[in-house]
Image 1 (cartoon, rainbow, N blue to C red):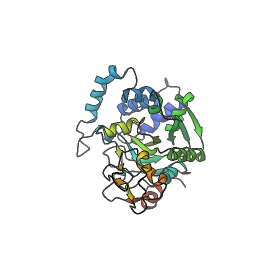
Image 2 (image 1 turned 60 degrees about the horizontal axis):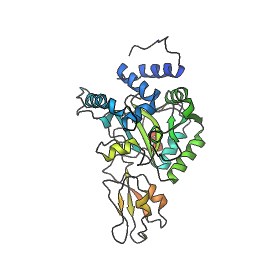
Image 3 (image 1 turned 120 degrees about the vertical axis):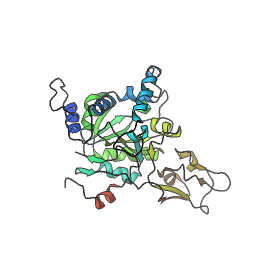
Image 4 (image 1 turned 180 degrees about the horizontal axis):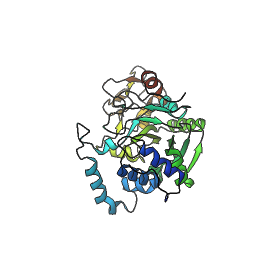
Length: 315
């Protein structure tokens, strides 16, 4: 991508985004345009995507064209690339989410297909990971009656954090790692799920942690409708029937509708369970726990990945 110098673009964060794209293997000019639009106007982009913006009907044919382009065969992939391969989230447990916002060194982890089971956008390349911006959630902001608070989307590292801050100053603010951890803690307490999001147009890598509820989140809405754009944490919930009081609290908190209480004790549908851990934290009888499910992708746990991966920069 020959974008070494664009004197007509004054924004420092835009220039940083361009330069980072130039250094990213396989990143095209079309990818950059897509990423710029997505990041520059997230409320319009997401509002149209989830069907809540007035322009959604007008842009529906265009969205169908983009989807066809996203699912075209590619010579560098064995299978067809689907929409979920271009934009997806990985469920992460609270401890893992805390790791992503408390780093003090740059990180480069690539080819994480065993963790991020998609054909594209599966790298964790964190530059200045202590640069964190909290953004009003575009999904919630587009809903008529959103869950509150709105400011729960954490944009992590550069060039993403500065871009979000510079272009959406009224709906974002810089925060510390401790403030990010507090947002994660509060959202988990509300029963919301931590998703680490990856997107091909966002340099093909991790760029944000969103704290999602099934009533507002566009990704969870798409997942329910058959687009497999969310990957399990690698764990599933397990019920100890001897402790379960069949109170139904776990089922009421489950964002993935994976728990029922048919007769005597809660039952987990392990195919639907994404291993977020919300039910475990909210069970008054401590009857639930998480266990590793080896049929699902490996957990996104930075400590373990860094310990076993040769690529790590910074100190």
